[in-house]
Image (cartoon, rainbow, N blue to C red):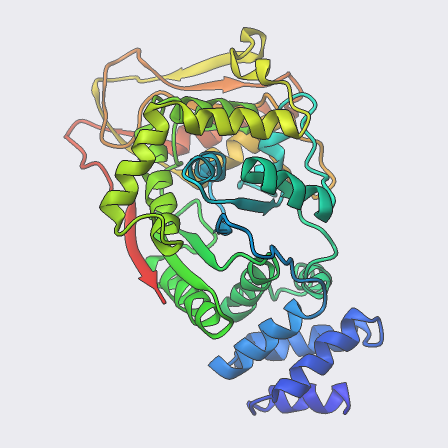
Length: 433
């Protein structure tokens, strides 16, 4: 079997066999296939696409390039979630403690942020002492003990995908729905959880800009789940404006803690409850979404979910005193309403970029992140505001290299209207296998 023949075959629009796809993934993983040939293969795939059989075979090849976690005959059911990334999206910090408090287990392998989207690991590592670098054995022990863990992705799971993704990033082949679906689902399948919920964002601050594109990605992932033995629910959610009121790592951790104590942003709470409810139903902990939501509400009101969050932080070396207050010395100032009216627009993409300029995100993978930098939103789209009222507050340790960029972005991102504005919906669609 020759890589050149496989590349030519896909270039010309022919279907590849499972053996051919496994060969090219494995040979690249082993270092026997040069970058230039893999780049040519990825571009031919980007242009020609995959049919369902090819997508399944390619995803299986990624999974088989590394370990698959075995959770054994655990009495508690293992579940997992994934978000396609957005601004202010800290649902993992709410969903994981919620489902753990409800008797399920969530071993969550998370990533870091790049550009305008924040990463779950960056958020948790804003907590002094928190360590995400658990071994697989330590991960399994912690999940058995407290029902959850949030750790950095390991090279032991789907290593071929990590290598291929790095090449996609520099060959203009990131924006391929089949490749995105295979990358996400291979990691989820290797993680060993039989029940998955996937939050696919759609809108200005999301990777998928339209609901149609988000649905197409969701449908691909549902098909993969069905074919590879996983129960998958996909929630298509709104990312035109940021989720919650906080953008930035330490700010978002504190907001998640507030939600877990029955307070905080309603949109963050409601989306987290929706995602967690799908997991409870899929794992057999609740008969339907309504009963699942009632059970989860009890875990919030009783303090059980917040206690799981505290256990997560303590078990991974974090200082829980961090949750008590946010130091005022990081406050830079606020943007105020220049008229009475209604908040018409909070552009998630521009606000995410503004937070990154303050130091909350990365523009390159090796950029340092300011854990205390970010934005606090005092109103959301549809809210009535008065002249002189604070709309957005800015936080940073003062390492912002271009304050004029932040000012310009905020001017473009926040728009008011004299007329009432309808509150946007949170969930567009739900897809299930």
